[in-house]
Image 1 (cartoon, rainbow, N blue to C red):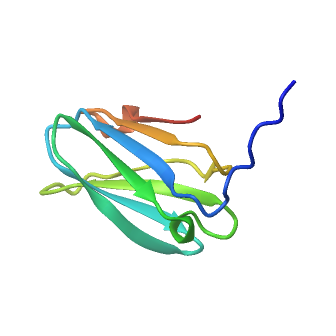
Image 2: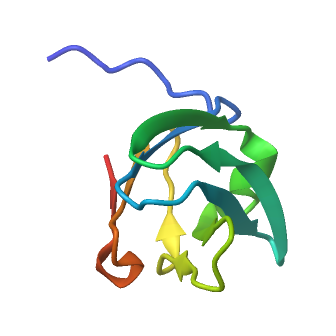
Length: 104
């Protein structure tokens, strides 16, 4: 059995957002007690972002938040713990309360 190579804890964490909402959504990461803007995902499209290590934070515990542009609605995930080498997939639904997140 071969040893797997060490994963760099400073490597970016990939975040893929699949936006099935009819509005563009601004994505934020809540980490270490603060919010950081990640970017915007166009309506009915998918976009990937690389979250730098500082955005994942010291504890590697984050929440994702999404705010549709032109709406008072919003969505957030539960607390997510990210291990080095993992990636995140966030699927935003037209009814934001039905959105899902997975870590691989």
